[in-house]
Length: 217
Ligand code: E4P
Image 1 (spheres, rainbow, N blue to C red):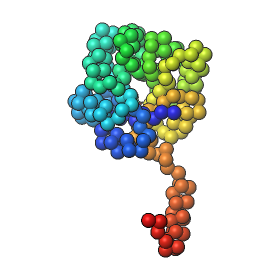
Image 2 (image 1 turned 60 degrees about the vertical axis):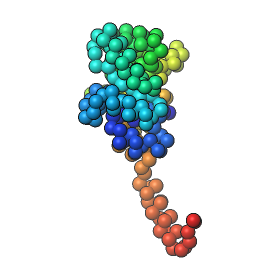
Image 3 (image 1 turned 180 degrees about the vertical axis):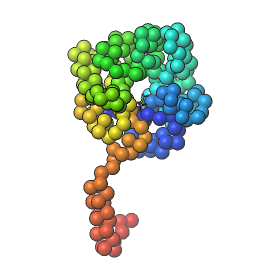
C-alpha cells in the first residue's frame, strides 16, 4: 500500500519525507487555504520535495474551465496529478485531461457507481471519502470493498485512493480490503508507528542495558 500525505503544509512534508514513507501528497482547496500560501508556489515547493504524485485540485465547476485549470496545474511539475470532483462536468474533464496524458484523481467519491464512471472516464485515481461517510453513520469501508471488487471484475487500472482518513483503524481497514493508496493526515501517519507495548518494551531494554555499563560504539 502506498501512503500519500494529505496536507499542503510544506514543513510537515519536509519532516515526514526522510522516513521514506511518503509516496505522494494530496491537497484540496481547503488544505491550500490553510497553508496561507499562493497555490502555484506551494504546489511547486511540494513537487520539489516529493517525487511521487502530488494531487492539485481544480476549482472550476464547468468542463472547459476545469480542463484549462487542469492544464495550468499540470504545467507546474511533471508529478502533478489533477484532481477533479465527481460531477458530470468533472467526468468529462477527466476524459479530456487523461486523453492529453495528464493524470487525473477523481475526488469526492461517495458511491461505487461514481467510482465505476471515474474508471471508465480514464481516472488514474479514485478518491472515496471514508471519514465523511462514517460521519453520516455509513460504513466507508464497504464502499472501498465494493470499488475493489468492481475494478477487479473488469480489470480497471484506476487506483483506489482511500481518502478522508481520520484514524489508524481507517488505514488498517483500507489495507485489508485492498485500497492501493491511503492518503493520510500527518498526525495519523505518525500514530501508525505508536504502540504502548513498544514504548514499554523499549524502556525496559534500555534500563537493563544501562546496568551493563557497555556501549556499542
Ligand atoms: C483527499 O484527497 C481529501 O481531500 C481529504 O482526504 C479529505 O479529508 P477530510 O474529509 O478529512 O476533509
